[in-house]
Image (cartoon, rainbow, N blue to C red):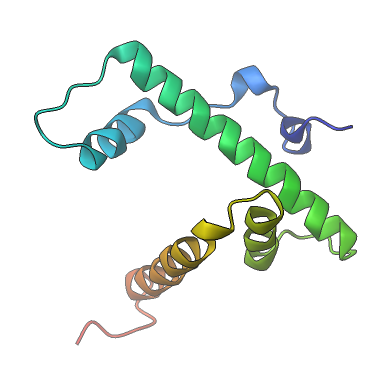
Length: 113
């Protein structure tokens, strides 16, 4: 079986997320009086990387079963369902739709007024 990171040509050790961004997200999700130890932050970031690897790999499998060559958003949503994360589909889809809207505004496709 192919390691999910082989698909993008990187080893697992090379896969990471921007620490500053992840730290900001972690802090935004917690009450202001809660502190998170550095090693706990590192562990959370590693969990996020593993989650992305898992979803990417399953999305690739879904895409392949449909004999497609490009992973589409619906493949990612199906992967969430297959892996038992169906409860997240609605929220993930809403975030994706919001991202599309924000991208259109940034690209001046949609007028700001």
